[in-house]
Length: 166
Image (cartoon, rainbow, N blue to C red; front, side, top):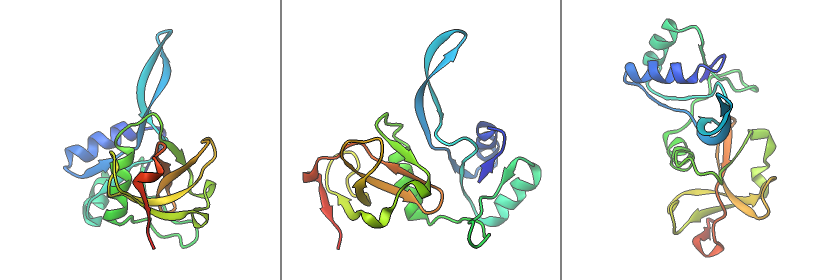
């Protein structure tokens, strides 16, 4: 969903009060507060939040708040609904708030050029993604994408910890 005018913290609070699952991808950035540089946790993409609930609950909460909007697929004009497995993979990586994660809009990467892989060791063991070269990084990285919304490229992973999925 989209929380307009950078109101994702308010939307998160409201959704949590209603006992609905929600996630906002965040990362640490250096920001100026009262003239000092401070390391703060800020949303990766402003106005973006993921809600895990049945449609009737989302509709009920959305009717109370005008700034919550559905994100729609530009081709079909239908609400984007992400499968639980895909979302769990994304949250497992994005929820680490690792400084070495790179985030991309869906049109910035051509995932068809990469190789489907599974990580066999380390912090992200068991996760699957696409191994490809991304801009802003010297080497190839494993990318986990939420179809049509956002993609995250993990920190560099040693090739010994990656197996190709056929």
